[in-house]
Amino acid sequence: MKKFLNLLLAVTVAVAAISCSSIEQMAKLAENVTVECAPSPLEVVGGQITPLVAVTYPAGYFHPKAILEVTPVIVYEGGEQAMAPLYYQGEKVKDNYKVVPSDGATVKENLRFTFVPGMEKSYLELRGVAMLKGRSVTLPSKKVADGVNTTYLLVDQEGVLPYKADDYMEIISQTAEGQIHYNVNSADVRQSELKSQSIKTFLAALDEINANSRKTLKGTEVVAYASPEGGQSLNRKLSDKRAGTAEKAWDKVTKGHRADDPDVKSVGQDWEGFKELVEASDIQDKDLILRVLSMYSDPAVRESEIKNMSEIYKELKGEVLPELRRARFIANVEYQNYTPEELQELVDANIDVLDEEALLRAAALIKDPAKKISVYKKAINKYDSDRARFNTGVAYLQQGKTAEAAAAFNKVGTDDADLKNAKGVIALRKGEYAEAARLFAASGNEAANANMGVIDILNGNYAKAAQELANAKGCCCNKGLAYLLNGQLDKAQEAIKCQCPTGNYLRAVIAARQGKVADAKAYLEKACTDPELAKRAAKDIEFAGIL
Image: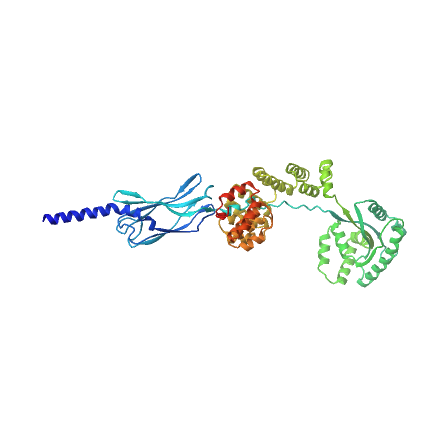
């Protein structure tokens, strides 16, 4: 009996020894636990690091009565960030954690960390503590992945915001005109018509054109008409005769005045002239007259209606129809407006001579931001120009003055697609991405679509970003970055046109991913003329093994 009790005691001590040493054994055998991580290196998407980690515990490792606390931690320059611990239990533990059986298993966890600057150069590790019956043992830390990829943060978040265009015309088409009038059913030019005020004004205009260095005579015309109350055939012949006599009259009146030989035309019945004169007249029933005539497509019927109406409405017979028995003398002119150099000189010397369009163009030419804004303010004060208000906001944004820009945009009266995009850019620069996305979607113009691509990059929607930016104007680097993040390296390289530091930095990333080490170093050398990019490159996981 004593022998049996001694044996039982020995067994009990042995079991106790095994129990006491089991979690220590888990610590000793921790090297047999394997870990896989995707992606590796880690990657920031939308400000978050969300790797999938798979931990494989081999058979015989996990004590059936143990609880394992695992804390994922990113260790970086300047600190560390830990997740809430994850808990696992052996198969004999009566709790609600994930069970790891004694014959082994693989557990997968989606981890989440918030990116902070400094994590570019970092590593992810798992810290474990095994617990059993009130005792605990710290397991060796298990490194999971090195470095955090932050390439998406190369996105340009300034936003695409074009100025409102002006309607300034460098060459202005003008005409000078005089007219001679005929008696009813006549093609004879009366002497009094050759000396009329209309002809005198026309000849004075011809002389002024020839004397003005800004004006170029591009051609002359003689155009003859007949009033539309006669028959169509009769009016065609009458118009042709008037064209002939008007051409002879041209030769007489322009003698001594420099003018090209005219292009002579015969129009026939002057329906367009009739409508214009009636619309401009004080005839009480002019809308009725025009409405009635528009009902008839047959010229003969319209002629008949005009005759009938001219008996009722004396203004037609006495004022409108006589004005249509005419020939027009026309000089076509090109006027050379102020050149870019002249516009900028006039801003300083005589800004008051500039109209709204000239002020908008002058402001667009000026490089100095303060002076540009002062010209826009002149257009606002003098012409109440809404475009100038909008452009003032754009100019402020280009200086980085977000508050001043927002104030300027709030004064714009036209809430169009451009204004919605502008307010979206303000939100983008403030980091209010949801509001920016709402405004870009409401705008829907070309610039807003490009800006939506920036939001997509920031949110990790790289495929959508590549679509949004495919036809975008402006920053080619954002387009190239979208393709790069989407894994389309050839398209990315093709999209990047500029030779700016950011463009060359992206080219270096592309080359590194393609395994072209020499090219990557060459592009980095160009990119690192920018001190900020040089500092970034030193920590960038994209260039691990290259620098």
